[in-house]
Length: 297
Image 1 (tube, rainbow, N blue to C red):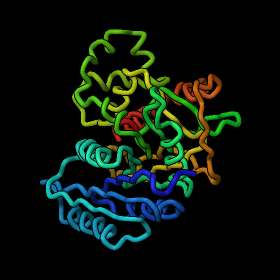
Image 2: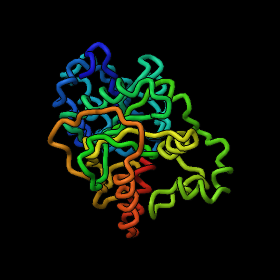
Image 3: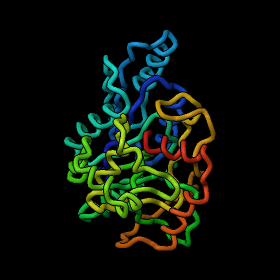
């Protein structure tokens, strides 16, 4: 159990989805550690093309935060201009991590398990000094596993994650040197995941901070901690989000039990094989689109 005075702050990014945001907040408040956790909320400003309905939703979403209780402290930053999802996350994470040295990151369409904060804080504490571990992650695809509670993977996640200040420093938004990756077939193959061609995302200018974070960690040969049972589910696949289509999500049911974080030093070959095969076996066009959107998000 992490020391309460050493809990990581949670940074939540919101915009114009009051119904989604409410579910995210309600699930987060069910975590016992929420009462001892500082919550930073970044509310993006309205777009130039914002409709009357958009403006109404933006206001309603912000009002949820202004009446919110259940946390040690709540700090709301209301932006006048629209930074966009990628810039909002990059700027917000950098700001808070420079103040607290570590951070837990959520977006407004993520519902978390009551054990989410326990897992994230324990992971941050246990792996704080491990050089090649770059993030703690709460989401997991429905992949078969043995009795492992925690696994290492060479991939990152954008659905409920955490990192430290020294690790966030390697984040390279320009993806300098990506040409070397693009021209190396072996590395490019490793960068992809199953049947999903993430290497293609490096060839075009895009607004995906997620692929940039993955690239930054990959080039450092970094590993990341995951639970084998998901502590996060995404409720944003209803056409309401920036990068989420109106279709069924890639999802897994939330773990009903606490997941103990243990120190591990190597990748479990059994789980890794099943993880990669999960993407090979799901080759439909719909799944590929959703997986690409997973990184865009």
